[in-house]
Length: 95
Image 1 (tube, one colour):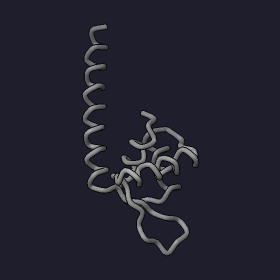
Image 2 (cartoon, rainbow, N blue to C red):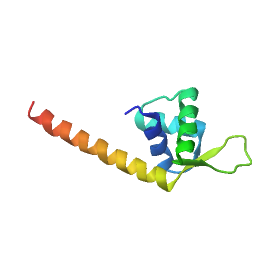
Image 3 (cartoon, one colour):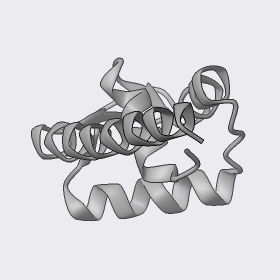
């Protein structure tokens, strides 16, 4: 799975994070290194769709939080991915 939106939402489902922390988390759990342009472009799109929201911060780094709409979207996408993965694994047993 390399869809930046799903990776970012998955990271934020574990708690609020700023951009660099999201990059490190995604690398750790998915083995995917998101470049800065990819990460921040996806963050902008996720904010525009209302799936994440920036948090107030006194620091230079701006943290983000997944919204209720973002959690719902992630839940739906994860269920779809789970269904496809289970089908693939079941079919591979008979291949």
